[in-house]
Length: 366
Image 1 (tube, rainbow, N blue to C red):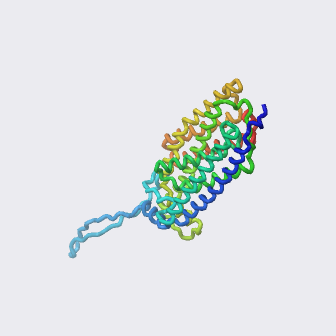
Image 2 (image 1 turned 90 degrees about the vertical axis):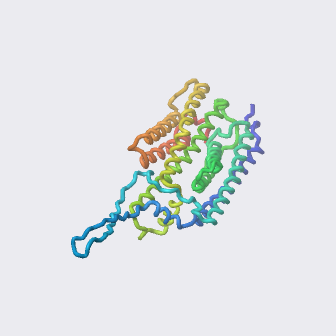
Image 3 (image 1 turned 30 degrees about the vertical axis):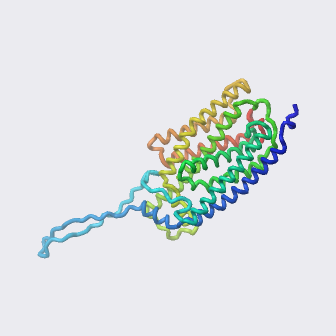
């Protein structure tokens, strides 16, 4: 059988055009998100500082004077005592979002989301036509996995927006990452549309790899939330300690303005944790499904292949994170570092293992 003859080159070309078109629209969405942050209200900093700073309490004490002037009333001011709260545990309201309460900023934010929806539609069309060009799942190599992964990540973001979750702050880092991912895919990882080796012709390709892609996309969203938690928590701690802006650079003050618009550290921490906790059982199933497929393709469930090893390392890292969240001494920043380490393991499992190590999973090529 001539495998090349089974490839529809016309559909493959349309797929490439749609992916490049999606990148162009994602770029416009990126610019709109930047504008949204720029035009956001700068009064948010003062509101956040007021919510965190403890006001000194006045204590009224009645004093009886022994002198002829009679009794009097003295008002004593209780000294302000700053107690550093545990990371992510401050009772601080969420920021107003990327638009910062500004009507113009909100307008650009809505434009950015609309452009993201359009780019997602083009992106999905590119993935679909790639699949139709070879009549198989569109994740048989690193190029296809990368484009599908980016599409699913955007889909998760838009799905959360539809569910009325306040996550428009995620738009800028998401679109930036998607552009980098697609740029790497089309320039370095690109592989011409073609059929796969016989070992991959299995329904487990649809089950195992699709679960891995969805898990990775959800873990990415959680990782961004966790990273922002670390920045926002440090910002809240600085305000809580009453540190002055005197001598700080313009860039530092601009960063404070951006951080003030994010949800509170507690909200970001909880959001990232809930996503990781929700997706962890699916990642467990992904590894089990891969083992079952390995037995059908290679005659063994587990062979300590580099991809298998790093999938297990990723599982252990996320298990440690979830356990840390249940341990009082490891909540907050320590647990956040574990979550980021776990996601780094996932990234290495994809890029590092595929590009640097050889194993049975290397047959798909770049």
